[in-house]
Length: 190
Image (cartoon, rainbow, N blue to C red; front, side, top):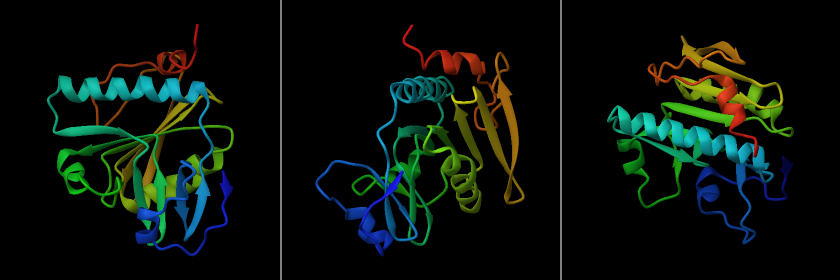
């Protein structure tokens, strides 16, 4: 991620910012941070998880939606773009005709680690999502072939790391039955 020249933006200015490039930005302390385009592996993993979570939501008839690349306001002049987030229909209804930046905590956020996002996903977003009180946060790390599931407990995340043939254990989706290796196999073209 590279910091752009635009700075000292308010959250409200960020919601309507458009530099005409089509690039995606996060807002960090009033500064725009350019999000590099994802790898094909990243896109395939996000696609797989998106379909998996949508299928589970539908199977259980839950009043939830799963979205890609929506914003999540994490501070006064701070907004992150999540790879995936699960929200209630009511949360989505509030943003029906405005920029899709949630100001209340999503039920679940999933971030897929890229070489340039390791520090952001493991450190900064982790603390920001905990402060926002996001109950469950997954860090899907194809670089280390592991998935960390972080559950909010008394304001801090308790982390469980899953690898190889271990099945992901989720509080949000307790009946989900998927092994870590299946997620990372989805990131391959073979």
